[in-house]
Image 1 (tube, rainbow, N blue to C red):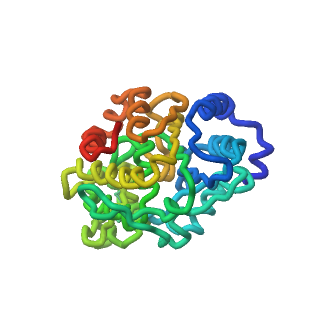
Image 2: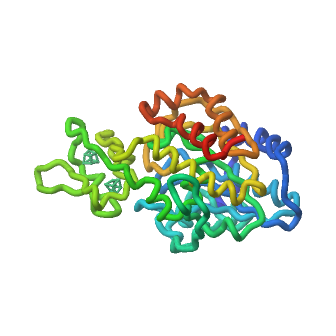
Image 3: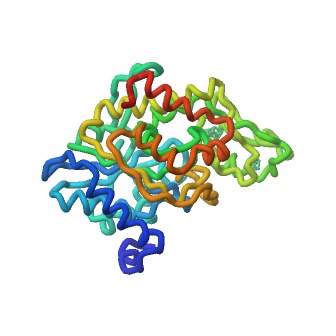
Length: 342
Ligand code: SF4
Ligand code: SF4
């Protein structure tokens, strides 16, 4: 559907129901920016063929709110590691437009924060795991940020909300790789149908069939831990095998977000959408079961606090059930240890 045809379509029922709530939230959130300030709105416009991404109507409402007070919004996301519809800037903008995230519909430019080739990046000081954390150079180019996140489940981090959006969402491809480096697929042969989807999807050639009648194998030297094979396997025959304590992934995720936050926190406001709460993130093409009912929006001025509130509103048990064994609680204790909390 094009932006122009979307404009003429009646509002879908969920958007009709929740847009007034978002308007009220925006009116009540702090507005730390002066008229004329350039504000970058961070969103995730969904992987190609994903069906659980947030529709663009909410982002458009945020853009309208910023413009109504004289600010100059620009909407952005960053390039990703895996093949699909967002690996390059060109692909990602095409995917954005197909999902309705276009300048025509939103009323502001849509850009790639780390550049069309993913190389417009800067290094920020790290905390414990990283000496430096590499992120989109956009952090240096605008006056403020509005972080708009879809709160839902996530294969590696248990849930994904504001912290994940600041972390993976701002990270350069190299930084994304550093966070994922120790994750590899583990095959359950009993489940595997040898369909070959994982082999086709693998961006590095790590997944392959060693022989015609064989099961797929995954070369850990070539594997970049992008988890695309795991997400796409139609019969869930793959799961993540960590070469490290899985809590370390939670720490790396939080550390990247904390480095970004130290740079932009004072000029940033956040909102989480607790709508269409699915098992996995908006990077997965295809089916993504809903695990909790809609809970509206929450906003705030600290990402860790906002994610904590979101978890409490939905119920922590939902995410424990959806991703058994993922030590996501470590996100909160680690945030406290490095001073990334209130
Ligand atoms: S996608 Fe899943 S079922 Fe298909 S070959 Fe790979 S592991 Fe086996
Ligand atoms: S084998 Fe590794 S690199 Fe290939 S899709 Fe799976 S996780 Fe990604």
